[in-house]
Image (cartoon, rainbow, N blue to C red; front, side, top):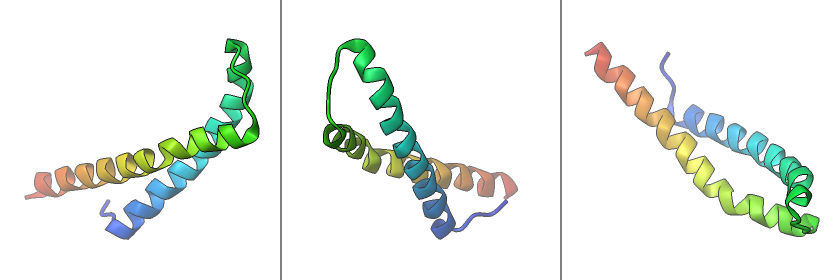
Length: 74
């Protein structure tokens, strides 16, 4: 399967958006178990701190595996 750079970015973005929503929901449920009380704004800020890293990670890993795939065809 060949994937363009644009589609790699789109896939990575979709993955991060879904992950962000799940992370916020998880934080809201789990933080109180550990005595961490924060408001919605803090949850959103904490989640945003990881969005850029997650997006870059997903995109770069996808491109790495695409490069490996192409090399294996040569």
